Length: 153
Image (cartoon, rainbow, N blue to C red; front, side):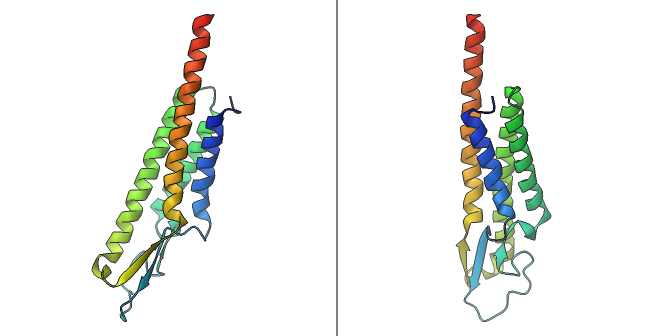
């Protein structure tokens, strides 16, 4: 049923993860206190980490948005909805881990001379995971309701 609460959670998950495509949704930015340049950085050369710095981050974002929207419209197949939501959660976790790895890989030599500032792009994937967890709970609850009604027939 598309009017259920899990539909709202799945839509919010797709919306928040899709929000990373906006230029103002940076993951982190850095400020350097050292007079030297940070020219040998690969991903943080512009002093901002966003999803456009690495194609895999874009791919992770697209996969989560597509899986969330697919799960939203596959409301008749609750098992597949749960599976897609769980896979989307794993992809968001990989997104977060890979973002931390990219940041650390670039900042390791300069860790004492830079100030890292987290932006909304750090918190959006966490909100997406929460939305997906709530969606899975709602789908399970809906499934138990349908099974209970089938038992009564």
